[in-house]
Image (cartoon, rainbow, N blue to C red; front, side, top):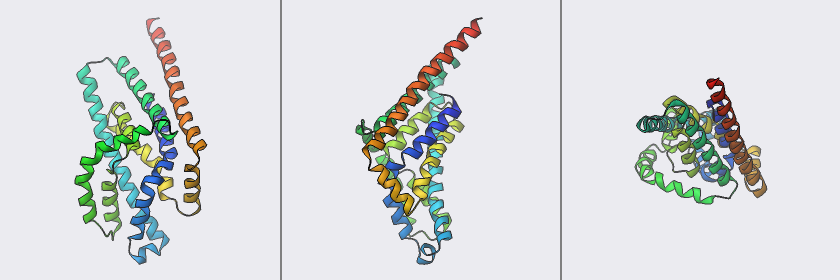
Length: 240
C-alpha cells in the first residue's frame, strides 16, 4: 500500500477502533479527569486543555514507538538485502495482512489478538510506577507527560498497528503512521456526554462491529489485487 493510502487506512482504523478505546481507556480518561482539582473540572476550557494534553502525550508516545519500529524495519530490509521493488511488494503485502488482522479482531472473528497485550507487560511494569508519581496532575505539562507514559499501556490493537509501522520503510513514515492512528482515536477519547454515549451504544452493536471489520478486510484485499495489477503494469512498461 502506498504511503497516503496507508495513512488514510490507519486513520480510519483509529476512528473505528474507538469502540475498543472507549472500553479500555474510557474509564482511565474519566478517572484522570475526576482527579483534577475542582477549579479545573468546573471550567470547561481548562478541563479541555488538560484532557487534550493527556491525549496529545499519548499520541506522542505512539509516534515515538512508530519511529523506532520504522527504523527496525529498515534494518531488517537491509539485512535481507532486498531490491527496492521486492521490498516494496513485501511491505505492501504485510501492511495489508495487518489491516486484515485488525478487521478480523474488530469484527469479533479473531479475539485471540488480545493476547498480544502480554508483550507489553514488562515495559508497563516499569512505566506505571513513574506515571503514578505524577499524580495528582496539577498542570497541563504534567498532563502531557502523564499522557506520554499512558501511551505505553499494553493494548493488542495498538501493537498490531505498530507492527504495521515496521513495514513503513522509514522512521518518519513509522511516526506518521502511528500519529494517524492516534489522531483517529482522539474524537472518542475527547468526547463527552451525548457523543460518548452514542459511541458506546455503537460499540455494543455486534452487526456494526462486523460491518466495520468486514469493510477493513475487503479494503485490504482489494488494495492487494490493485497493487499487484499496478505493479505488473509498471513492470511491463519498464521492459518496453
